[in-house]
Amino acid sequence: MSAKTADKIATGVIVFITGLIALALIGLLGYILFRGLGHISWHFLTSPPETIRKGGGIGPQLFNSLFLLVLTMVITVPLGIGAGIYMSEYAKAGKITSAIRLVVEVLSSFPSIIVGLFGLLVIVNKFNLGFSLLSGALALTIFNLPLMVRITEQGLRSVPVQQKEASLALGISKWKTIRSVQLPIALPIVLSGSILAAGRIFGEAAALLFTAGMSSPRLDFSDWNPLHSDSPLNPMRPAETLAVHIWKVNSEGLAPDATQIAAGASAVLIITVLLFNLGARALGRYMHNKFTASK
Image 1 (cartoon, rainbow, N blue to C red):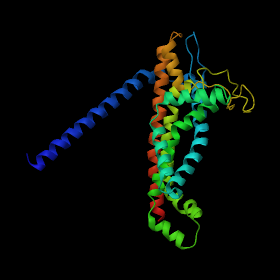
Image 2 (image 1 turned 180 degrees about the vertical axis):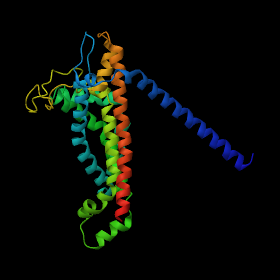
Image 3 (image 1 turned 90 degrees about the horizontal axis):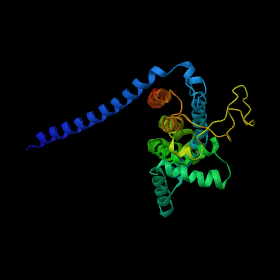
Image 4 (image 1 turned 90 degrees about the vertical axis):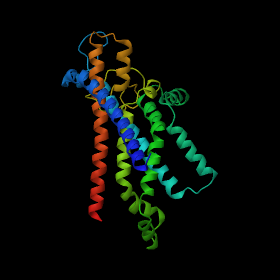
């Protein structure tokens, strides 16, 4: 068999496998959207759920998911960027650096249920934070921190060495070079990675079952004082997210329209995650074009 024939066969096999994966993904997404889009309405998106009666919505759960996302990213992004800067610019080759990289890799491969159990034992019980949004945010920070560290490190390493050396040659300090030269260049990659991490947060359920809780108190959306127990912005209250609500509705199924609620909530979740991924690509492309045009 000639090399040309072998190359064609290998290319055909790869294209075939890729097509099968794409078809499976499109079929799965299409099935979920087909079952759920018809149940989505403004009432469904804003009204509270019903336990045993028909006609409930996902309003509090949708808000909880968005609030938890913001709270998690407020914690994850500064820590991830800081650790990525250290690993890229300050960490020297050695046993300590190798151990840190090993820990980051191990954390990135942890099943989310393990992170949830760790959060239950340490964050919820040991530190007495209870089932709360803050407990869920801290658990998801552990889950997403390795991703942010790797993304920041790769973004900084992608900066041309000549630009870094030119800044240092002008007498600019290393930290100011990182802050004023390298980070702006790496910003498209960091932003895209942050949005992708946010999409992962929105769809997470297993880790939140043991940290944020499986119930949500009645919220007073006219009270935005985070110190009040019934305020939507109180980070110390339990909060059932959209992904947890889908699991709960499918497992309990007490409401007469439980199947329709689960289908509609699943469609909302899929659409939101798709928007996050498309937003990451669009934002990264915009930032790259803007940077290229300014050079």
